[in-house]
Image (cartoon, rainbow, N blue to C red; front, side, top):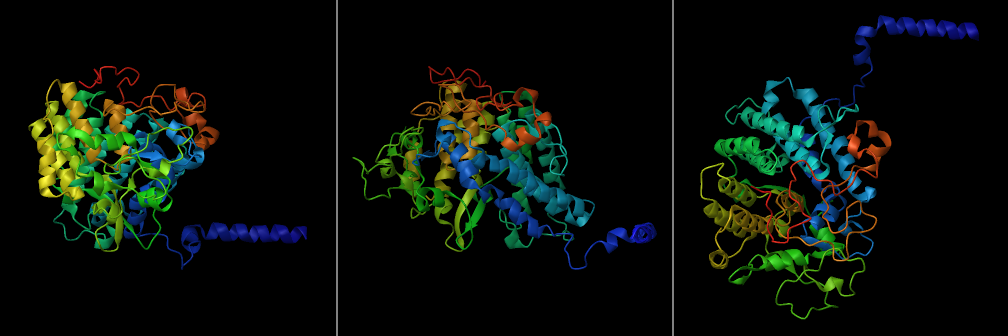
Length: 512
């Protein structure tokens, strides 16, 4: 038996040595796909934010922006508790999903010039997702990440600077006149359906978003990047907005589920209060487009206005479901789709956001233009997108106070209207609040949870790293945050310079 084993080993060794040149070919099954076309990957990349929307976004940024409020007693996040089985998914799904897919596409097609345009489109999208990731956590694995190897964490400053460069290169790489380029089938490009000019404007608008996020921490670089983005061409109308479609025939996890089908959320009182009193006309005409009342077993004293429920209850009131919820019949395209197969849209970047970004850049003197005029234009763009009747929109806008007072006072006015217009994009509005400390957002009604790593009477500033990083990759993490105790959720991100502990005057002194 021993001789047979030795002989067999010699035969296998001889076979292996003699066939080295053909090894890869012989070990690739003829009926297995080893190279996937970009068309089959881009859909999954686009829909990643919706994969676990409730656990990754609604229970965290949406609540922290105070667009929505909790009405489920077992939800811990509104009082700033971390739940790894919820928000921990965002980290894992990004690194093992779209990032890994994108890296594979670069490996397949990176040297083929006929794929330049589609890889640039993917690059723009990945930069947007990278921004969402670093704005959630802060420093994260970035350079070399997604290849299956452990890499060090990079600082948010390094990541931001690189994202601006990547977006610039991607936009410049797109050739709208090259007929030899591979193109996504129109229905696979869920954002712009093959319109490369819109892709370029989206990429430049993302550059502007990143630049303005850096305004307080690196104003010189921010000014340079903002001016270049605007000069190269940002979004021009609501038709340029980036919105992810959701189909009624497929699985999707979005506000229709949380606020209506599952009945887990209601409008936040913070947000609904902003829909009254901003204009001399009183009620914002978008209010009933976005919200309605659902539960007939409860009623509020006055249902002629939209009223939300406070954020951060420890013990919910018995009538929690009586408050305003999503209006699926209000005609707002974001909630009721386009009348075809698309049931809803998740906003990724509104055109109105771009206008407000330009207004802030003009207020700072970084670009040409009238800040007040752009401010009004941003409100109008939101009214148009929501579908407000022209006269109602005009009356509301005419009733607004123009930007007046100090730069800080004007910025507060601007960010407040941007906050309203950005609904329901909680990720962006939470970032704006952390960066500028505007608009005014309440602390949890019943206080910060004793189980949260956020100091009492302060706001949540980031999401801590998931358990798998602490358990498996702590050596790569920032040394100041590589334990559960030090990885706190009240640690400011790089671009967050606002002191949320003291705003007794209603204004900050750190935004200019």
